[in-house]
Length: 68
View 1 (cartoon, rainbow, N blue to C red):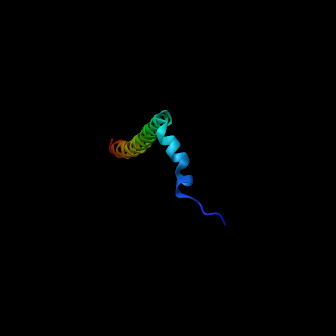
View 2: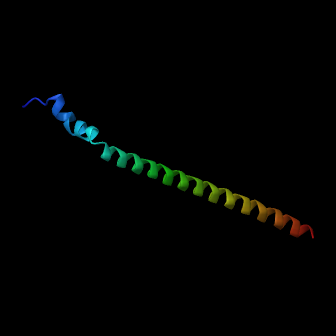
């Protein structure tokens, strides 16, 4: 079985690190993915809270309507 050199394993990584254009693209992709994830999380949170407030408002309206 041939021995695997540590240098041969990291050769693609070394080539990637020398060419910073790829690293910049990866940075922008990760930044965009993070922002999209944050926007989705905010949207879900706002949606769930809106449903909760609407249900509470409906209960209050029903209670007040019964008293009239």
